[in-house]
Length: 143
Image 1 (cartoon, rainbow, N blue to C red):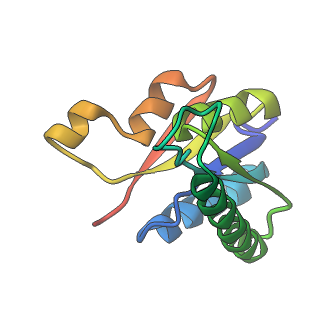
Image 2 (image 1 turned 180 degrees about the vertical axis):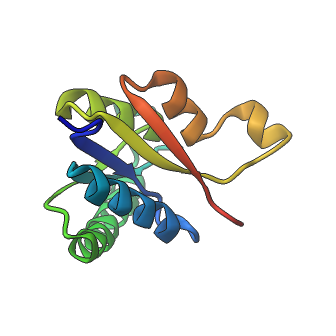
């Protein structure tokens, strides 16, 4: 039995995310684990409540999801991954929900190493670290 059997890579497609993806692929190869990838499009509904989003918010969200699916599929092909998910919502919640529902052993996220006000407000990596039902590996991403 390996220490990890299912790894979840959470990507935001920012610069430096390739380094995080490579770490996830290396860990999957070293442990023989399955690798899944998630990208979360943050909900864009600024004008109205989530129950009644504005039409332009829905159109923008739809376009972001379409673009994210394309980029995620390219990354999945590069890493030879078959299970991917693009979700809309709060990144930390969606990542942790997928991990729980899919029986993930470890979540791999990038950490931008923010300080000051950004640190006080929290980050996706910090949120995942505190909410995750499993281990979390935060890979430092250079700005």
